Image (cartoon, rainbow, N blue to C red; front, side):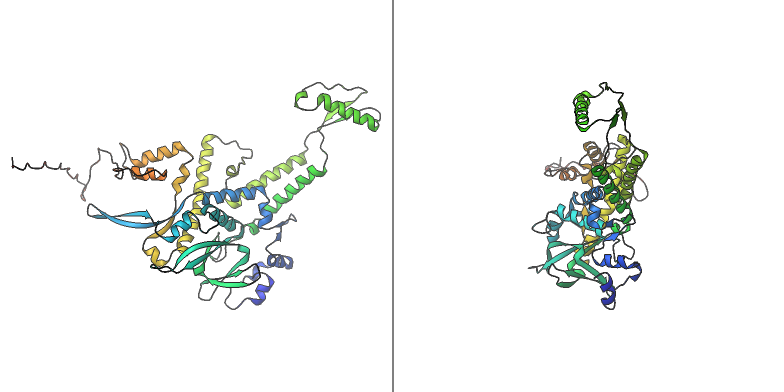
Length: 440
């Protein structure tokens, strides 16, 4: 429970942060759902923030970076090659968690939908909570049979005296239930104390609020304002029928794209004066562009990823580098955050000791660019001047192709030789020919 009642009823041992409540209205606003008013006069929470197209676009880009990449469960393996132990890995398809991560965490959501919503919760609320439904196993003990995503507004957590966390869930009927870490998968956003994820919407409410106010102001301008393309001024006064006939005549002879560029001829000393955008209108548009960049900075999304280039025209080379920067600085941190949280909350210590871990197939990002994908595969398979680190079956597996017999060997340049521990060449001895049965 947050707000005033939390300060009055919090049990001993619960973490309290009274310093964040300054004004009384902010305290009550926080209690009733975190709706805070920005300096622009606009109240900002996750729902009003999503009404800003920039926030919605950034959250979708970030969610797509997490949800559209395969997420699988692996197990580290060891095998002996030439008398030495070599580390490897394999997909842990027999583990119950594999299908939950890769295909469907429950009966009504796909893995993409689940992770997409998870990322929205982390970005806009600072937390993502998932209920882990444990069921008894026949041979291997209890296992997670399904994962149910929870509304962050209906979950609170607190740290106990021993440092552990407990979670209180509030149902639609108002009833509550307290669960331990064993039943909740908790993904936090950026955090100050490693317990509470920072509420990005709250910290960026000034930038988001100004964007909402600017859009509302612009909408009101077009709804209530008058913006003619020009003014016809005539000597003398015209009654209403004359004004109607003049407007109809101008529209018929000079309105529309077909009449563009025609010479306008007027009588009675009438003059046509075109109207132009004022400096105030131009600054209004600049403000809206500026807010797009500010929101992109907060959510760590490059403006080009939401289709906004501003006044900068990106070349093909610069755009390629921007996309690469997006993968490195935006998508990869998201993968590391969710991957580490999944290893911690979904796998036990014993399972991690046995080599189980979750992993994203980052190479899937190369799929849209066939040229980049072909170049990477060519280098990874090896060539005349460099040894390869992938087999043909590894590459075929990425495209869901069947493995081929004899395609599990690594290629190495023919001019390379093996060195011993002293740096000397190891002679390559050709196998001796088998002796004939007669001994000849």
